[in-house]
Amino acid sequence: MIASVCAICGVPIPESRLTCSDDCHEKAVDIIEGQFGVYKKVVDAVSGNIYRVPVRDIIELGLKQQDLKNYPAWVEVDHVE
Image (tube, rainbow, N blue to C red; front, side, top):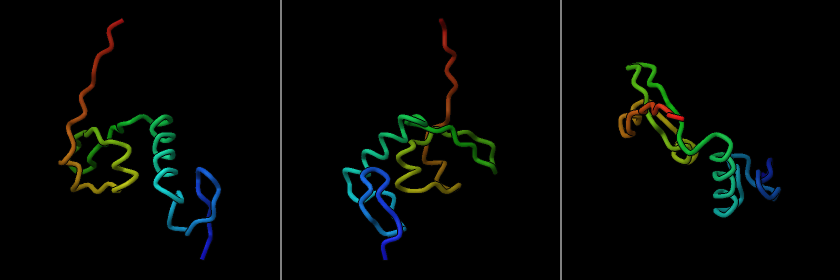
């Protein structure tokens, strides 16, 4: 059953997908990273620890609380002008 279209090129695709091909997937990830950044600051609601998680991992793997320990801690950097 075709219920959706590719977010990049508009080709009909199954509803469970966002893109029709690996090329369109890469373009979609590039667009999303361009809008939201390559990394996201993710707070573990249980521990309160803050992690630096790649947007690509969130898109491709999903994100579970127990997986956060596999990512580095978020470090705030002071910008000096």
